Length: 203
Image (cartoon, rainbow, N blue to C red; front, side, top):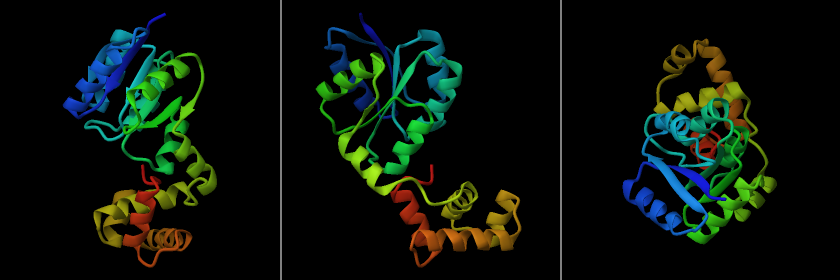
């Protein structure tokens, strides 16, 4: 049986190389490729691939949001995230979005092809080192609202700016920022943002 694959990757050269290498596998066929996250669902609706390989950072929408939409629109297409970002928060978010696999781009193409076969057969495949890190680190300690406030703080706006953006009072924003800073062991909100971004908790 031939496994039909869609590639979603914004770097044209990398996407072309991946398509060529996977095309050499006797049981894998790349039926479509796109360079934007907001093209994933329509392409999958048109080509009905067995599996979609999604990058995380893409124009339009990111790969995690594309995975969420794909799970609703074309549930028969399994998702594998292939990214340069080996962050445990991204792994947690990908699994929550319904992804069946999470691999890093520096993996050999033989490993990627093997992962495609396993996911097509109903298994779940996760980069081993990232899986160990995720188990030891655990999920984000931030509440959803603390995450929203910290994400809004990435723009270096004032407390009033963040409050207007999130329709909260300035006092509530201060409380959430203070709680997030304390939970992350940071000294400032900028440091808290950096820690949360590094771990992939602001997605």
